[in-house]
Length: 241
Image 1: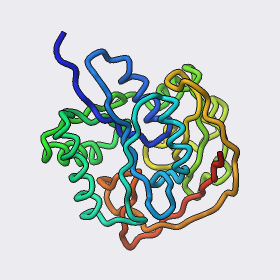
Image 2 (image 1 turned 90 degrees about the vertical axis):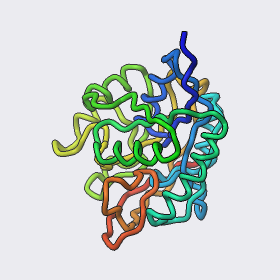
Image 3 (image 1 turned 45 degrees about the vertical axis):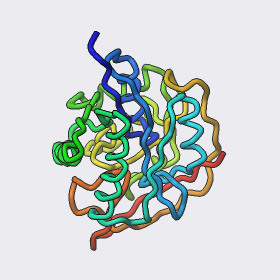
Image 4 (image 1 turned 30 degrees about the vertical axis):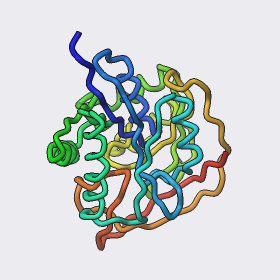
């Protein structure tokens, strides 16, 4: 058997990350050294998703893979974001890491951006979910008995924020909304299923609406929005230990 690919896994804590990790863990050619998550320093929350650091840590402990946090400012510009990521990726390269795994599904610009930035360091990307049908992916996720709660939505999906995803809930999404939220319509927190040794418990808290300077390019990392002049709004549900 050829040598294993030593990998980092870009972990957002949501359903797409969960299913991509599910696939990666079944691949005998892959060895995952770290779960990598960007965390907003000011709030100690997963960037964009808004999940508290404490719950992120619980996820990693339940999965059994070391968590590596990359701490970011509240709204980094692309230059700052890129330089921060390059610093950490270079450290991984020195440790012998060769690949970085992502849960992206069909955003070509985002894939190109990731691959180009990794190539600058001498790393390669792996996309376990790439070009898979998003309706089939969410159905597979649920059929594998994974559970996830919607923690962040675009303004028009306010009524879905704070709800656990089910087959019925997916059927209720507006026709123009991707069933996996791949266009950034919503983000989730996965808390139960095959990759977790134990269920992550939490209670729901306050639901709030926040506005952000929206990324002007699809190349901006969805887990770390970067500042521009355009405003966009999102509903968030707070998850408490």
